[in-house]
Amino acid sequence: MLSYIRLTLRKMWLFLANLPMERKLIVIFVFLISLPITYVSYLSSRSMFNSVLVNATDGAGQMTSNASDTIDRYIADLKRYTALPLYNTDVQVYLTQQNTDWEKNTGMAMFLSYLNHTKEEIIAVYLVDQYGSVFYDKDAGINELYPEERLAKWRTMSEDAGAAPVIQGRHTIRTNSNVHKEVFSVLRTINSVSTLQNIGILVFDVDINLFKGIIDPVNAVTQGNTFIVDNNGDLIYASEDSAVPNLAADTQTLNTKLLLQQVNQQQDHFQIDLNGQSYLAVYTVSKQTGWTTMVTIPLTRILSPVQKNRNTLILTTLIIIAFALFVATIISHALTKPLKSLVRLMKRVQHGNLDVWQHSKYNDEIGMLGSHFNRMIIRIKDLLQEVSITEKRKQKADMRALQNQINPHFIYNTLESIRMLAESNDDPRVAKLTYLLGLQMRYSIVRNEEAVTIRQELDHVRNYYQLLEIRFPDKFRLNIDVPDEFLHLPVIKLVFQPVVENAVFHGLDQKVGLGTLSITAWSEHGDAVFCVEDDGIGMDETTLRSLNNSLQTGTDNERFGIGLRNVNERIRLHYGSSFGLLVESELGIGTRVTLRIADINAKYSEDEFI
Image (cartoon, rainbow, N blue to C red; front, side, top):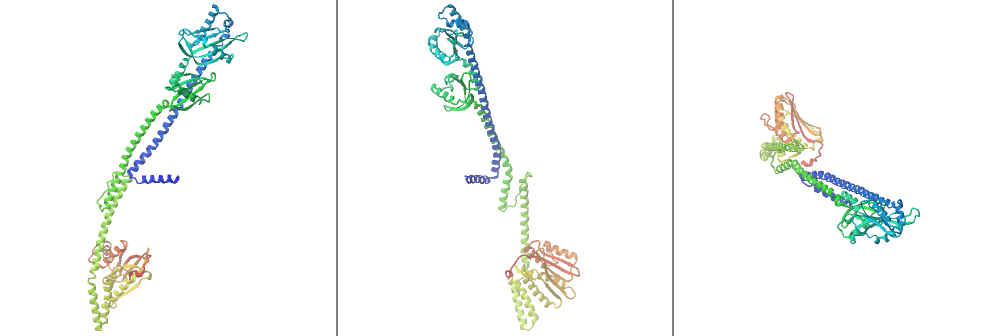
């Protein structure tokens, strides 16, 4: 499972990483904005939901408690009223009097009238004497009552309750022959004060609509439906005649039972699903009567404001996210536009077009990148121009080298013929001269590869010196002091001989007496440095400065010929601009040419250059 999650995250990351920069910025912007807003919106909606639900529960609990207290106080008053016959001596006498005369009727009527008017909701008060005679007082709207139909029930209930008052739950009484009313009754057995014997029954009939005035405010505040059941689970009163409106009677009874099954405390609340709809039920159980007052509120009514606010919040969140997406698109486009332009220019450069230029408007990192791109293009142009110039110089140097070797095969063959003719005529000097000159030509012809060793170059110098000795006997002296570790180093051909030739003809040839030419070598900063030094006539500072400047810049100068400049050009082309010739000279003392050509630490095999 963990590996699957890791693989999924990696795929998501690769997908994001491979997106274009503009889309990456849009995704990041929207993610950073939408996630906090969505989370805050969720927390706000949830907090609002909980707050509204708690407030509704607390309010409904307070209202049901107040309603239950009001009912308890009303019932308590009725129970107290049932004790009034105990304190009325005349009534005590009338209840034990068997005969009914005018005085008894009048006394009982006055007493019952008084009791009937103690509460507005009382529709009838009954007194049953010791002999079963029933006296009653009724509301003006009732023409006739039929207490005889209920007498048996009263006797049973009063006997079961003893001397305590008892409540008869909701029931129907007949009035005016065919008219019925819904009432609940409070009745009590009346005992004689003197004998404590049962001498009668007092009954209050209270209109069931009493509860309407108590329940309607609860429904108005909670927007629910309230019902009251007695301690036996029988319905006393229900708003709209149901615990859950608009349902059949059987379903109502079932729903009421389901609701009452959740009642296990004196006051509490719970949520329940009835007939496919969720309700919040809040109840209070009366300590005095045992009646349960319960209000059921559809959650849709409670949460309707929350849903409206939630919809508004969702709409606002979507608007903010859409606006963020719009802004993110604009910003990402503005940020990536220079990059896209730079990529297009790079593609043009890739196809060889260097006539491009990045115009950066701002000095941020992208602007700096564009500026560096422009500098890079300038540098590339300079390098290409430098390569072109270097290539031209190399071609020119090669041409000069070829010019110095015009038809070497013809010259070599001619010299070989002269040598053979000189030997046949017994002229050893001419034979040796032509032999040495032939070796010089053979070195140029046979050794036509680009690189040779220092040993081979020095041998070529020695052959050249022997030629000079024949031509100028006792005029020059050659000293070669090069350590053995330098002899195997590779070097391009013809780097020492032109320098030696230049020293002979421009320095030693004009000197009076014997001249000395020395070739030495040493290592310096890991490079191999060779020095060709003569004790000839030297040169003044102006001539020396002009010569070094010609070697450094590569410009032609007719005063110095092409020998040194050709060697210097070829060395710099092969090894780099930091290598080449350096000429030091002092008038009347001599000239010193320093040649830096190779890395002494490089390992080469001498066989590579044979």
